[in-house]
Amino acid sequence: VEQGMFLAMAELIKMFGTGGPFYFIFHIQTRAYYLYQTLIAGGAQYRATGRGFVTRHSRFDENWRFFAGSHIYLGIELACA
Image (cartoon, rainbow, N blue to C red; front, side, top):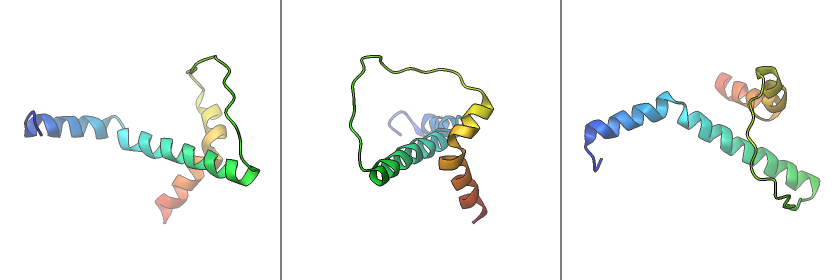
C-alpha cells in the first residue's frame, strides 16, 4: 500500500495467479505430516551431511505416488466436505 493501491492490487493478483497460497498450504501440510510421523515413530535427529539442498524435476506420477497419501487425498476430502 506504500507504493499505491494499484501496485498493491497488482501484487495481490500476481501472488494468487502464481498459486502462492496453494504452495503455502502444501508446504505447511508437508511439515505437519512429517512432524506427525516423527511423533508417532518416537522422534528423530538431524544428521548433517554437508550435501546442501538439492532440487530436481520429477515426473507427475512420481509426485502423485509420493504425496497422494499425505496431501492429495486429504485435499480431496476437504474439498468435498
